[in-house]
Length: 461
Image 1 (tube, helix red, strand yellow):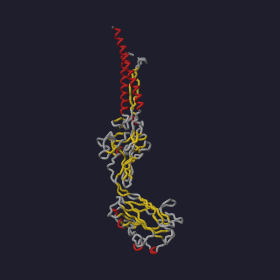
Image 2 (cartoon, helix red, strand yellow):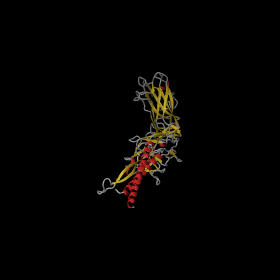
Image 3 (cartoon, one colour):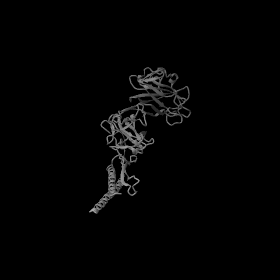
Image 4 (spheres, one colour):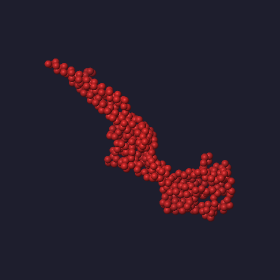
């Protein structure tokens, strides 16, 4: 080996350790950066490949390579904002540089920096300016998820969420009808389809009647009456009429009259329990206001209301289940009526659950899922290209992109949480000392080779 080779090796050592120092310095500088992934320096020896060179002379110094440890989890830290999101496990948030997915100025990126906050237009954006993408809810409330179709994603916008109303779909009635109720004299001529002899018109006084409020598609409130009359035809049997009040709220088809929605009998067994098999079904299918004239025994919302169709299941109980209607020998009473649906309410807050569902809460108690945030996975996440702002882009070494719902074979999303950097400060300081010593040692190689060259030159003198 020539002295010139020794100088070259020394310079290679200085260069490699300088490069490693750069990576260590960047790690230390980003110790508090949300979602930062540290860089590790890997040294490898260089050799001169020639059959005429001995093993002692074959060394050509050292080179320093680097690897960003993207797949390594940082520590999750609590936060106060509901849109601060961390990932416990594998996966990346899908983000873009523009508010519109697929726009000409949009660049697709992936990040673990989940400090999102709404901008002036309500789009969720992190500190680096990347906009969060998610699957939007479909009109029926479902989500059209696709493992590879990036175009199915939309930028999450919480300012576009307007107030919401929810139409009633279920009414649970809990109460009791008095078993020893005396048969009314009017029961002898009772006829549900005749206004002069039914309960809906007011001609016959029910033994028991209660009003339940239900909500339409626009959040409007309507009164539905449940009227009961003890029957003389069979034991433990009651005539029932369900009718709207006022009757003008609905348009009905014969033989229904006086705003009736359903007529029939309910039956109880010998133990006073509701007999669903022998009783009428109370599945109320309201046609839309625009539906026109209803068919026989059908009914629509009145055309003046301008509301959508809906089906309301009135549940009076089932065999062996608690609650519902009973027939015991105590006073007739409605213990409770549980009605879903709600009037119009304004937005009060936004939350994100561990499956990535972005849920809007409204002042009327309605909770509505509006987006689902997917997590992007790769065969080799460490092969992604690093970009500014703690984001990454696709690369040949990363493998193909796959979108998954949080918790479905990937990590879970934690709201009010941020992922800290994965830098171990003690380890970085140790590496800093090691690199400093190696740099000094490489400089000694150059100093020693220079002294030997100086001695060689002195020989001539």
